[in-house]
Image (cartoon, rainbow, N blue to C red; front, top):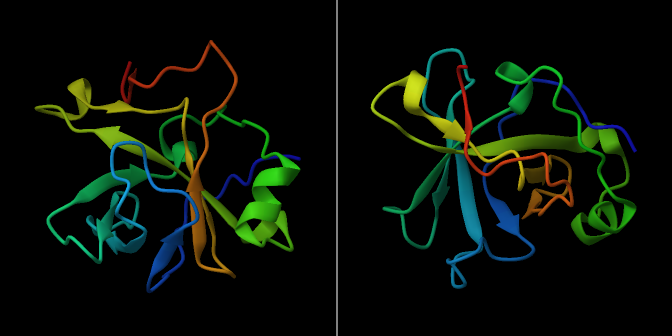
Length: 136
């Protein structure tokens, strides 16, 4: 299946991870919070531990050619009925500036806007990095 390419993030009150993020086994409920005025930079902020958050962006904003396939089993896991409901986000590692900030393209977070469920998927593509510079 093709990857959705939208950079517009819908407002989703609470997202439930169907599998925990690696290293955070007890965190399953997150809010998608807009960080900038354009709605591009957001954070996945833990509902259960509000001090824990992950900066995320739609990859199309910085990587317009990034288009990994979404597997059917992932859609089933999310309870998705349509690929149109899927928003793809990449987790950022913040640097001192945008020039030193990196994105994890090897493991995007897929959010189903209809079911409000999400999962981080590890893509089987050695060409994708967990630390791809945002600007390069």
